[in-house]
Length: 479
Image (cartoon, rainbow, N blue to C red; front, side, top):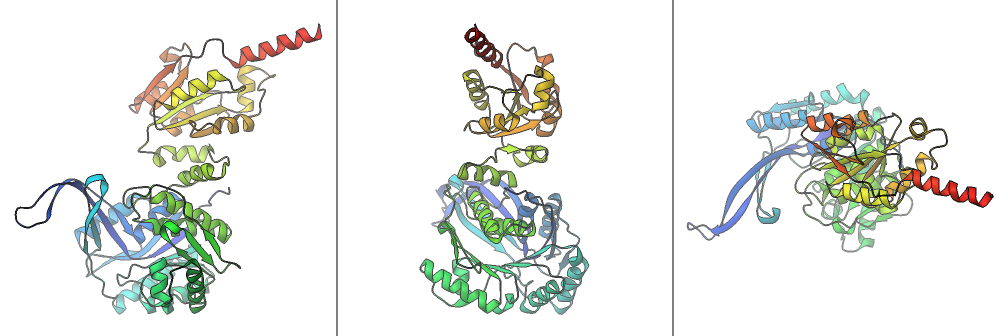
């Protein structure tokens, strides 16, 4: 699979604060026949168009937002959260309106029991419209793709949306619209429109009961908006793309669904990142579908990393996406910050039962097992010119084939020290009779609060002994 290039993507739309109260319901109020929610924890994350931007950052993109907030504490908090994600905030401005906040109450087993919204949805003033378009012209020359993220909070009015599309066309920049409402003409001239099934019905008035209905309504919307493509998301039924010859139907990724919040934002983010990187439209839709499938397995508004998508593709098509590179290693800790990462390394030249048992035990120590694999040149320096027996690509693929191995990374150094510094594992595993002070990386791991664990090798099982036996039998055959 091709890598995603780092492109400049501009998100224009309604940003908001998504707040989650987690707690429990154990009794009914004596004041009225309603449940009593006992709050235990609270967290806030960027939502709406800001969640699109966060997912784009997770996809390795350079992201700017044009939006509007209120002159209130919620607005300040939202700006801080967005800024923490390395998103350009200089095109966001404050006005005399409330910053939109959606507060979700999650009770037992993260079940959403109620949502509280605070917002103003009146349209921009004429002066604010001018500011939006001025900010667009400031950034447009450095932009590779624009996403319109419309939540009907007053920013993307008909006139503003049409002016954005007009300016984008002047600079030959594709525009993708995540749509709401009933005003299809507002999006006339975009490159791609992404409604869900209900939004497709609202925008066309056509029935959408069957797959054939959805395809027909999508084509009607495409023609009405003079768009190149329409991608309709169908929740558990997957996605349908029209505008690329025959319609392209993708079933949803089989995944346990915990929360559909933000799945559409995740899908459009990866769709945009892939299109900007030169993927074909069908490749981009395939990736977006996988990203949405991963998102619904998470609780609340959150982002999906490129590494997670690669892992999922690896499971789905048996490809080599478990084999990662140095760029992935640099981001490993941030991508898997909530996971207990186990690291071990070695040559693994001729795989044998000793390796299998050792790696299985290593995986049991945490959530993810990543193997640092010595490159061919590294093995040659350590073991001699007659090694390795198997080339690094073959050794990596064999290791990646084990379901208890999550990632394999090939390194050229004689020791994995630099790799350990990049990955920052929680557990460093080594086999044999090493003393702690002789295990490379122990200090770095323990300094972060991790630990070294020594696992015994299986007696009599080693690559060297296998090679010796082969040589002995070969020599006997020559006598």
